Length: 94
Image (tube, rainbow, N blue to C red; front, side, top):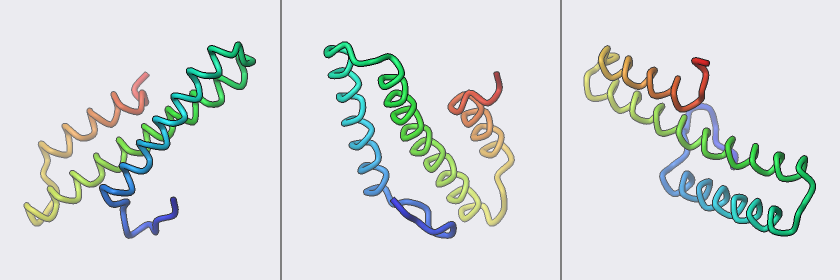
């Protein structure tokens, strides 16, 4: 799903990503039921995780852009909450 750096994904595009992740997760379930090799299952789990992380990061970025537009500048409280959410979401803080 190619988007330019200046054009964040639309809600519809994010929904497509979520549906793709949902399909990947169903594939993981099938793989487990078929006793697929652990490495193959882990690759698919990583793909699902990356897809979900991307949706979350885009939602956080969208909220920050909206806050900036609403306030005419960066909203300090919103920025702090968003950074905290980002840290929890992406597990960066570990």
